[in-house]
Image (cartoon, rainbow, N blue to C red; front, side, top):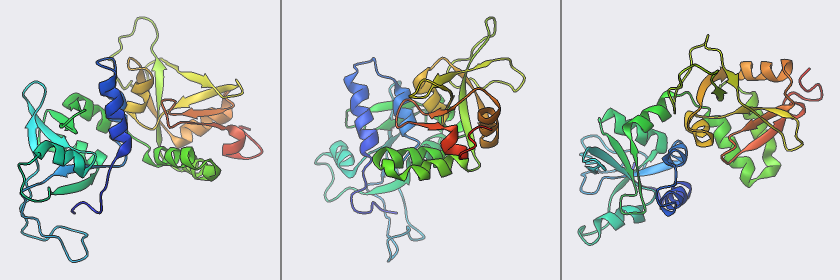
Length: 276
């Protein structure tokens, strides 16, 4: 579908600015984790792309030309944008008339880059920009995610009074990523190193705001890597997380400390019986 009334992704645009402002000290993992949320635009300027009367889909027989470019090492790159203005920045005065764009879920753009065998995804190439490598894209998409909880975190960080949205998401069936510290003598594969089920490892923990012990959980691999890029990880179901909270010494959990984040007590999650 064509761009509906000025879709933008200010969160990714802001993190790109921060990445470039860090002058090499910034982490592309922070950019990557935000590319699993919201929407990105593809530049399809020059396409023959008639839209249905209700604007919901591209009509059959359309010809869509998605803009690509050379990545940092000369390899093929898919270009993606946070707004129409960023597409216009690339074209300058070369286009006679408005640019054309397709709005897609950001995670679907990552998938498209891999499906089309690109080596890079270049975000807002008109600058300030960031190029994500194929390895980073594969890591982000390979690790199971909990988009429901991640979206709930956005809600409660803007509207704290809607905390029940987050609690419902944490109770729903799903998965979580947990960071682990490998025992001495075991090799660590670095970012994205998923451990076999029988590998001995120490789950990383944290504390609640009241200093009681808490389980540390993440909604995606990049969220875990944003906290400590060298950690390996395991993936637990919601039921396994709940079991650890009920049977262990934890008073609650902390989700995605890189922000947006939340601390939730067992009493909130399970009711007055807490972890019992």
